Length: 489
Image (cartoon, rainbow, N blue to C red; front, side, top):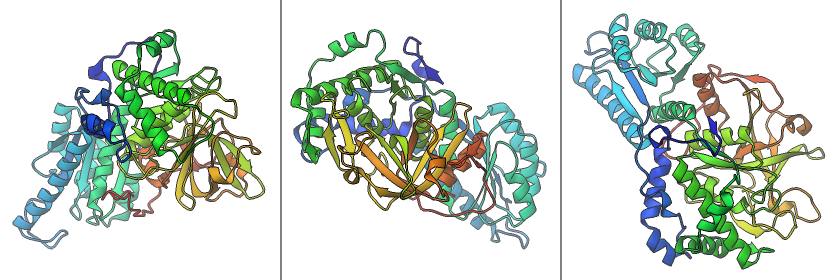
């Protein structure tokens, strides 16, 4: 939900991604050392180091795995071996839940014939989501019984090749609010928990909208110069490949806006902000461009021109994949059939919040106006990427492609557009004009189309490709490696 700045926010009801908080707390605790070593260390303000912990979603877990090793069925093995299989899943789920801030309620015994023991547990605990593991051949009926009477609880059914009943799999995959994750990659269950966490967070999402609001100038004046603000300034001036137009006082002013906005996020318990287009922070000055880039790098929603659709997309890719990105104005290159997106607030942590990579950047002014500080970020050519948007009718559009040109290939002047420009060769798009509709697209440096469709299936979202064709999950599964040991189907 988007909240106007005048709304109140109860901290106990405002979700905060525990991955992000752990990252910020670690960086905040090292703040003093970072101030002194900006040439080698990044700087993150310690404003969130003491952020209180908040309750995460409750996910119920049930196992369709027989308790003994009798009979020739899969998995074969004696009782001890089956107990080891169960213990392996328990540990994997508990470790992932602890990392992600998810509470688990695991049914100790396997599902019985009609799934009633699991359903009774669910009725008592009222979980936010559930994961049912179909790990035994010919036990599909127990899972089906639990699914039939689950109500509206979003459910992931996981199978690791223990199920070969394709008709049952197809019927299960088509159930509303159910995602069938069939893969031998056990670590995929971490993404299943991420999906449940994101569903829970989305219901509680709180965005501070359309800064600067009344009273913002006073808040800005309250943000005096400090060691933290100077450290932000030092980071950008020392790590920029080049500083073209902005003088020292402009960069300091932008750092001060960042400190102000971030303090407002903390005090209100928000997941992020949008800034108004007709404001000094955006098109009328460009004083918020650096701040929004920085907030994205720290895992917060940060959308300009009051774009709620892109803000929602930012929230989802940050929560599901730890991926910040770039909100761009779409412009088709009809000569080469590229989709070019340009804007002034690209993140630099394009490979993920917790990855070491940071894209090279240059500090510029806004549109050759002599005002503000805009980030000109160089996206890596040849890498896979995803473009997405949420339309006014709440329908999502998504598609993938390859980065073919970046800021260095689009000089300003003589070219128009905003400071960061990225060209994509889109998959299965024969005319880039068809994919240029809409005000902005949200772009991330990874092919996340298939895992996003899994989330959309679980969440009941309508999704189309970039030219308007409806998309849905199929029974075809791939196994791209996400890079942190989690495999997403």
